[in-house]
Amino acid sequence: MGHSFDGDKAAVTYLSAYAGNENTYDSKFDFLSNDIYGVRAGGQMAINYKLVAFAGLSYEHRKFDEQDPTFLITRKDNQYDFNIGLRYLPGHGFTIRPQLSYIENRSNNELFEFDRYILSVNVRKDFNW
Image (tube, helix red, strand yellow):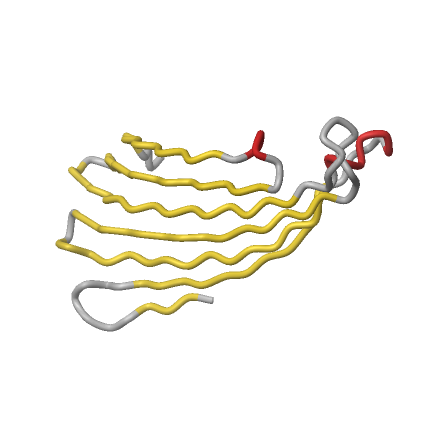
């Protein structure tokens, strides 16, 4: 679900939910199969005609199907993501997109817990043939 607001800032918001599952082909590895569900929300707003700011956040829950034979637990993960960034249009089909992301994964198995920060800058050139 999304919504575009009136006005010169061209603000857009979105909200979505999803569910699914990942299954292994070999039943010996069913401890790696899991059911997932999650939600995402975010938006963007024009600062001027060449610069757009955006932000998003999401939550995902994963419950694994079988007990892990090594750790003797059935794994459950909760993952939280947050990102902010800018999209700059310098001209001639180029887009420059700096972004900062933070990902936190919490699990009942400490081996799979982590915090991750990602700073990236993407440069893109569109060719209109």
